[in-house]
Image (cartoon, rainbow, N blue to C red; front, side, top):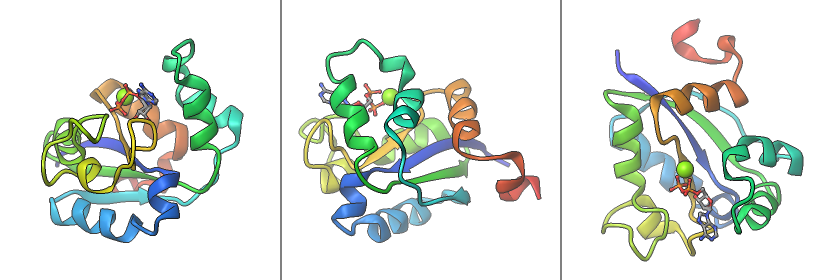
Length: 141
Ligand code: ADP
Ligand code: MG
């Protein structure tokens, strides 16, 4: 059994109809989708999810964007899931993201960058619990 990360296909990628292609890359890279939802976050929900970034100059823009349209949170499992998924998505700014990464190929800017991935195992567990109940996750059924 691997470890888990929380991924989100962000509103820009959903709006551009890129979610199918992004999901295919995730599955082809060997991640098992343990849970998935399609939701539209409220502004306060987005602020709660990104609480760690409150006070940053981009906080208002980020939380407005993330609550502007539907997104797709997912629980992904793989060996070393957090680091492996961060490698698959690439750097925050698509201009810095390596060739072949999801952000390089689908993100339009540092703010609207197609996908979220947890940055540590500890944060992954918190972020999974933000969107999913224990019984929503396949491994727990
Ligand atoms: P990552 O998503 O790669 O972990 P951060 O945790 O640093 O990046 O930032 C969270 C999100 O905030 C980013 O994915 C991006 O959507 C947004 N963001 C980060 N930096 C900026 C910036 N300088 N301008 C606008 N939005 C930003
Ligand atoms: Mg981050």
